[in-house]
Structure formats: C-alpha cells, structure tokens
Image 1: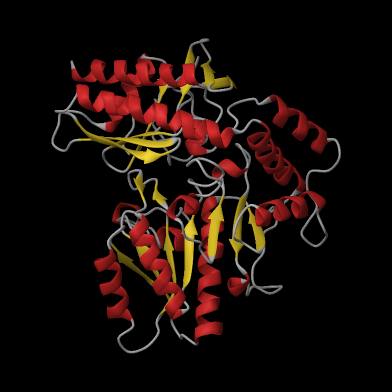
Image 2: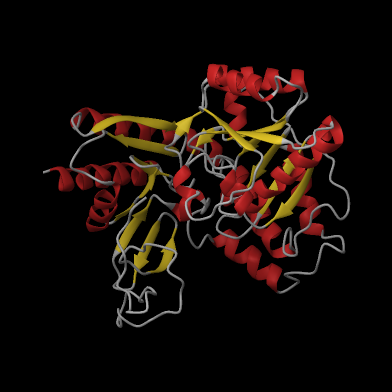
Length: 421
C-alpha cells in the first residue's frame, strides 16, 4: 500500500514529525509513514502531539483487541512486572501453561508452541510441515501449497509462502518448496495438487488463511474449505490455517475456521492474542504434534509478561462478551458500508468481510488511490489502512460500541466525499 513519506533527511532516514521535522531519527528507511505522531490512546481513540483526537479503525493492524490503555491490561502487566517478566523455556512457566491450556480448551488443538509474532508462528508451521513431510510421508522435498494473494509474514520462508510477487522482489532466491493455487477456487487447487502428485506424494501441507487480510479482505468459501479439508484428510496432508489476523474473536468466533465449519490440523495465532504485546502461537492437533526437543525454540516465546497479556485479553473478551459485540458491530458496520457503496457506485465495487474485519473495495481505473483516502481520513479524525491494491480495511478494536461505530461510518463517508467531490 502506498502511503505518504514523512519528512526525511538527506541521508534517507525518516525525520521525526514534530517540533524538529528534519532531525534524523536513526531509523532505517523501511516504512512510508504518515505525517502523524500518536502520543496516547484510550479505548478506540488516539491523540496526536497537538491534542487532536482520532477514531482508530486500524488498531495496530488488527492487534489492539481491547483498544488502547485498557485498565485491566495495565493493572495485570504492572503486577506481572513486579513479579517476573522473563526467564527461559529451560524452566516451567506458570502463565504459559495456563494460556496453553486455555487455547487447547477453546480450539481443536491439542498442544501449543509460543513465539513472538505472526511471521514466527507461520515460520514454525512451515518447519513443522517439512518435518511432517519427511517423517510421516517420506517425501524428500516436501511442498507446501499456498494461495495466491495470501500474506504470511516477512521472514524469508514466510514471504516465500506469500502469494504476492511484490513482496518477493529483491529477496530472491526465495525459499523453495512453495506452490500456489487460486484462493476459493476448487478447480485451481485440484489441478495444482494433481500436477504435483502425478508421480507420487509431494505435498506435505496446505497453508491458507480463512479470510485473506493483506490480500484484500476476502472471506473463505465454505464449499472450497470443505473440499480442501476432505482432500487433506484423504491424502494425509496437513491443513494449516493462518489465523494471525482472523483469530481471537475478530470474525465473530474465537477462530476464523469456526465460521467455515471445518477444523485444521494446525493453525497460527498472533496479533490480537497479545492485545498490542508481542506474542505468537503455533497450535496443533495430535497428528501434527511431531516437534521434539531441539527441533524448534524461541528465546522470548511464551515469556511470563507476554502470556499475562494474552491471558488478560482472553479473560476480558469472555467477561465483556466481546464475541457478541463483534457480531453486532460487524453487522452494523457492514450495513453502513453497503450504504456508502450505494451512494458512490461509480467509485466503489462492494463491501466484504466478517465481524470486525471489513473491507470497502474500490473500482479499478478511478481517480482515487488508497493513499489519498488514508491521507484524507486524517482530516476527518479517522485512522484508516488499506489491504491489497484497492481495499480500504476496517479492523477497529473489539470493544468499539454502537455509537463509535456510527462515528466510524460517518467519518469514512465524509472522507470519501472529501476525495470524490
């Protein structure tokens, strides 16, 4: 997604957007930053250094589950810091075991490995798939089937599994062992699988998102996922779901796979699990539980501080019944987005999504860009983000209420009027 560069110095590093806009910061030039410095937040609101308040429909990219500066999270993490924040996985960690037990009870998984991010969780899944292919299927060069337009992270293996060539440029040679099919397309999947296995088993796993996020907020098709599940079961291929963005209640269920009426053998989680704190997880059924000591590890993975954050997030989701709120606010948001589509039919194709993972699809060949819309939204005190090349993505905190959702819709409407008229 193309955004606007913040002021930068002659040496190419971004400058601090504030009292000294040209001062070098020492940061590498890896982000195109908006001209906004956020200094504090509360709930769905954030404030810049000038005191201007914005409604946050980005939520750290679907991460700040409980919004900003949540009271329960602050208290729990302060208490945790007064006890212990990190030891090592050389020892048992109480908070980690409690969290793992909860995740197992609330999913189809039997065991969990903790890491620090979605990319790491997917990297773990890829390693697991390869070992499964070697150990369980006797495949010399295991292949992982992935979907076009997917996004699985920025590590070299995760980006190699990502079905968007723009993320590959400049990082060749990519990690080998990934092939791609068209998302939600049974024929494309079947043809690719048959092509690869015409001389015997080659595919160890299928890695796919239940709803594509970076690829444009594309919900999975139940018929497609049912077919893939049946084929994977028949051929003893692991079905791995990337739930990094769709998990932890964002789609109106704890997990995105629950709305598809199937169960994966493996799935990954991160983003919303920590509510803004770094944690990732690889969750597996018993048939995929093949890692042994020495196969995989993480220094910080599952540390007491990160696990306490995740435990607090899930406890608050349960206590406040936020899953229902996601369903209600998701329906409200979708209704508002449909009205906006009806008002601007020459510029908008459709709205799509599940729960509080919604997208507004721009038409092709129009005099609008995602960058111009995101920039215009700042004038209307709204934070927006894109998905893919032509989708406005809306992933607010799960705590957003009815009135705030109306504010979001109204500000988005004003934003589009501002760039169209």
